[in-house]
Length: 379
Image (tube, rainbow, N blue to C red; front, side):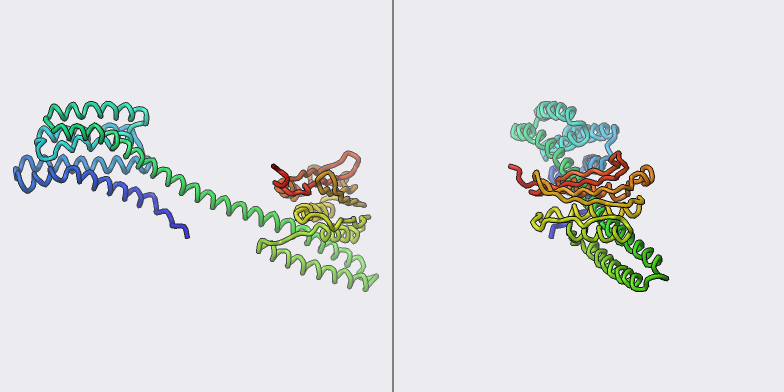
């Protein structure tokens, strides 16, 4: 199980606390000396005030920049920390570790300042601090340490904030991916439910109308239609359950047989097409949806009198073409809301899809899916 990422405020608080402990380690020996050895009230007050102000201001600036609350005023905070840290060694003496205070501001340079400005400032401070240390009489080893420690401290501060922001972006990206996955699943479910119920309910309504027409003339025909309605209703319930479970499969042969039967029951001339049993499995799903949606649109959006269905395999594609004569009576601009979903399905399968009036009074739906399947046959 993948560990969860703590909240941003928790991570920021940990980083600020760790940084405060590191800085306290630099200043603690000198502060210890002031409290337990020197015991001079004036020096002790100055040491406590300077150390407390430095740590408090440092923690605040680091927190603000971790939370992306940068502000021009932060430059003045960095300048104040630098002034305090550079003032304590000459005021309190350098023999007991107050020279370490010169290193404290370096960790904030790349945090507060833009990268280019921070680079130039770090280079300047790397030169000026040792010079100031020599002026104060710091040991040569301490001065040499400052030359190496200042750019490392600046880089460490920059990397700390950068890593924190990277973790934040990853957290936000993961949340966005989760939202996107949920949205895609909702779209898939809505599309499948539309395709399944749209066709099934239209077919049930059609059978009910046929039964109504024969209710006073042909009891046998009425019973036949009611039986068909029951079968269709049960099939629709089964299909909806499979859509919910996410593993519904579609057979091109079954869909075309059902389509031609429904259209014939509605009074359209529609011959049952021949479907080769050797068609690859991957073409049944997308092309079966085409047959289902085309039948629904013929019944719902036009008053066609005939429908012709053709299935061809050749040229590396399996092609289904469905033509009806209802284009002239179809409402202007009404092509069925499921056609956009069909185009998405066929495109996802690596195929081509087209639907629209053919100019001769017919409405034509054409879909072609590669025999090899999407992604196959590529070197």
